Length: 108
Image (cartoon, rainbow, N blue to C red; front, side, top):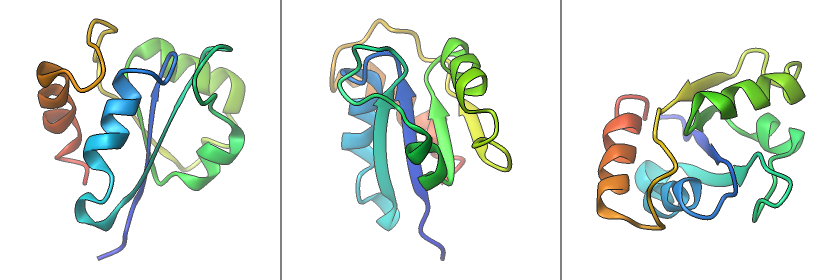
């Protein structure tokens, strides 16, 4: 089985995408990273992140739009999935973990 590089994107890379990185790191041997689309993100998404990733999970449609706007060429041939998880959860929130697992499981 091929190991998959998973990239999780939210706005500031503090709660949602960081939680996803934490809970999926090492699952199935996959490599996991996370980043944010905002200028003040903990780790700001770069073209390098996009190139590294096999599957990109964005938390909201606005993140998908921002990625397409800034990295359209790098996204060619990439699988980009919107999880539709609103910005209303803190880091490692139980409900957030449940939404992440149910949203991601069918892809990995």
